[in-house]
Image 1 (cartoon, rainbow, N blue to C red):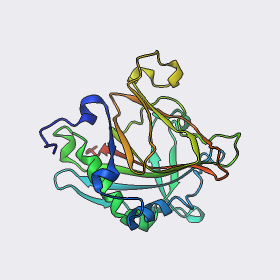
Image 2 (image 1 turned 45 degrees about the vertical axis):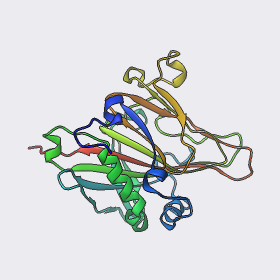
Image 3 (image 1 turned 60 degrees about the vertical axis):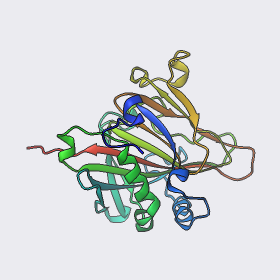
Length: 258
């Protein structure tokens, strides 16, 4: 068991991988997992990428480092758009520089799912914060994202479609399922390759390349130490829609500004 005085692999190496189904003792037949998977069935299209096969919901929360308590930030109602939440990455995503993206809010069922809360507690335990950062709450972003592709000649694409850094100090990806999919490969590389494609990284310089294939197979990155990438997906040989569904979690310190 890792103690708080130990340095987690995520912080030491800049990235780490886990099997949270084994960690949590959860199977695909568990009601909580089936409920989480059901959240992706009618996931609305990403309003900023309706042609790219990307569907998503987003919620924000507050994590108190000193007590490990978590609570959700209320959603914002935007008239005809319904309940939404703003997502800001400044200039870290070249597709949306300076854009406050207003994304559909997560459902109450997703917010209350025990797996989501286990994920948040686990992810926080892998992070480390300076004394000044740990004196304030942490902002937590939780994304439900599904890439889906029907046409065998098309691709569904994550954003940005290049090696990148997200801006949040710690970012985690947790696979919920992938069905009839080719692609969705993850690449971890040094920060100097931000803005490049994996083929631009010289042989031997990528830190890792892998695919998440099992439910709740996961990885995390320390944003300042690495760049990362996930390739587009294509439909596999089966007749059904190709889908890759993940829960993304990010942690950012909240500081006093006067």
